[in-house]
Length: 389
Image 1: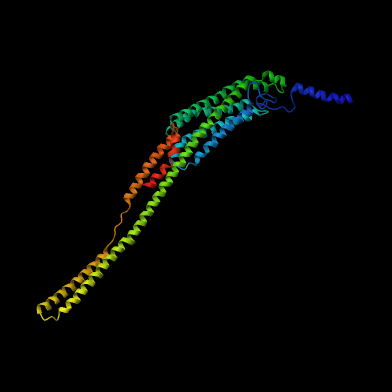
Image 2 (image 1 turned 90 degrees about the horizontal axis):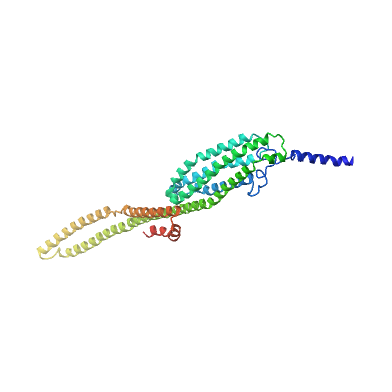
């Protein structure tokens, strides 16, 4: 009985060695382990299909994370100019992610029709390749923002990525027949799997995935730099808009204050001066007529008559002048300019400043040599000009 108990485990171990593990690690719908697919690493390669597709997906996630900030641009014109660049990167993520996610899922399948799975991946690959021409056309339309060199650099990356993805389809064609042959074996032993296992194809597949990772990783700093320059210029233009807006508010406030000051000061002082003139003239005439009355009883008839005539004339003139001055005082109005001249100066100033600011901004976003240094040194001078003028 003791020996029988020892014999049973030996039989089980022998059976497992013949037919493979009872709980094998699945790879590409094959119920047996294929090194470099779901687990393990082939000699001379780095990682397996699952690990490397996850690395590709991580790179695509970086693309998406970087470009998400472009949705929050404050400047409508800059937002419009950056749309093409953002759309292409979003499209790379949206068309590429299903390919690599499906490949990762396939690498972990235990059963299933691998031809159907690979056909689905190929369709996704064909869809991404078909978008390549459109991607290039859209990127070419961003030359004002990115500059010729920036457009060329992004175009090179697009070419590399689309070639890389197209190569995936070729490798899937290469490894599919061998996987189908393994599936036909029923319950293959690990030895049988190893004899049919398309090791060369799996090695190529991992190499292509790593190439994608390397291309994407080297592109991330470039994309990040472009996005950072765009965001920097967005803040710059928005700041100048705020400054010029504040200057306009200040101008309007100043004009309103000046108008009120003129109306309350100059006009009232003019009216008061006219009323004072009336009072002074009245006092003077009254004083003169009082003195003339002293001659009303003079012995000389001519003097008496002259005094009476002069008094009558002065009294009439006093009435006329007083009425006239009162009328002038009541009708006097100080006319204030509508501020159109100051507004014209402000508009011209803002126009010149914003035109120069946009030229500077586009020089920075398109990475013109030394543009960033020039901007760092002089960008706050733009704020000062409207204030000074």
